[in-house]
Length: 90
Image 1 (cartoon, helix red, strand yellow):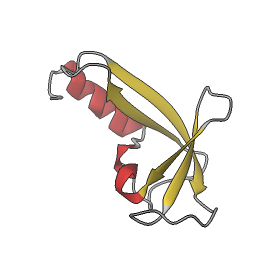
Image 2: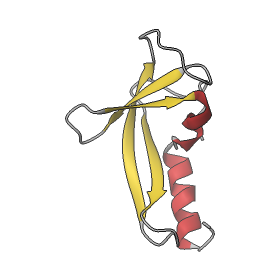
Image 3: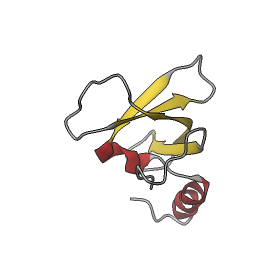
Image 4: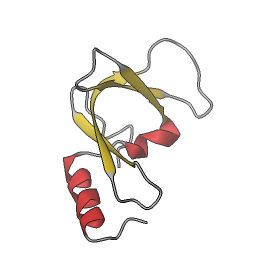
């Protein structure tokens, strides 16, 4: 899982969600890390981290410090998909 120390501007990250409550249909979103939030708006848990939604018209997603664990690098994505394949996601 990403931390503020491991995020690299321009790096690719992934978020995995599931369409259904029984975890049968994963949805994978590809993100490009842009950098820390710089607009001066404060958030409940501190810093914000800006990602571009790859494949969009430039749409962006801001994750707060408490949310960046959801941004997976490629190795973490592979492990998450292996867990899904093996029925270990619940």
